[in-house]
Image (cartoon, rainbow, N blue to C red; front, side, top):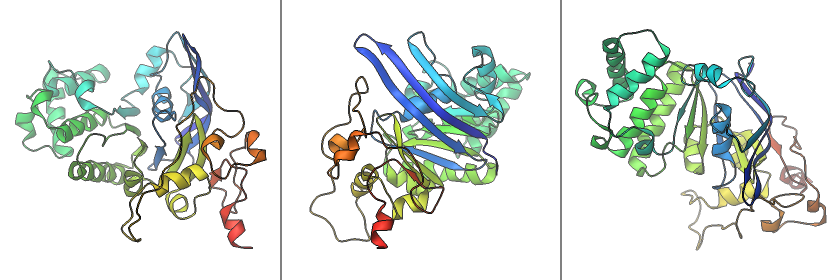
Length: 329
């Protein structure tokens, strides 16, 4: 199946008073129709900058963006701002991390959804509000006829996130970018939001790009996982491959930090030593080498992102011999 979104060698840097921050450095991945691709990594790895760049939200006078973002045959990086406004919401929608700061506190939620609909559709305010009620109902908000007149502060955190998802789905986009949609929600509400995203993916064949640092969320929802570290992709694999046959030491560290119910309780969870590097002056060679206990002389050279196993869908960026090949000796 041909991908609906193809990102090729995407690079995003920002000029600051302290120097140039290389936030995203050579990122490439595809998203197929109906596929859920999770982008994971620590804070500062470049996940959110990658997601926001897809729809032109990082454009500014101090930003430099190169590479390609191709959506359904159209190049987004070279589109004008006016052209991009026709893509945002209409074809690619985004749900941000904190719905309380994304929603306008002085407008009713129904009016905010209706405004978004009327910006792209030639409909009356009454028709747009009627559509807002339908959208709130579709994301599981009870009595939407009444709640459409409420303000954001009258909703709980989970309900506000549902409002944001309803707004994102208003124009029936092909791709939904969800930037940490379950952050700051308790585990029960997290599960509800994940079930909602899963049902939307299945019922509408909606492609989802999920940005998160929580591998538990990834295991619930994703078809494929892209692991980012210091602006680079260090591993890209189908979900089961990544969880059962990870190849990069950084991925090992992320997986080791998860408490598991199918194993004996450890005294301490695995901890990745050190801190992520500054993207003002990233390490030469392998960017994870300063924190990697397996680092050796060759790690001073930058490893390529390549398929080192027999599976061409499993890519990683490491000089260590693949774990699968060592085990089969």
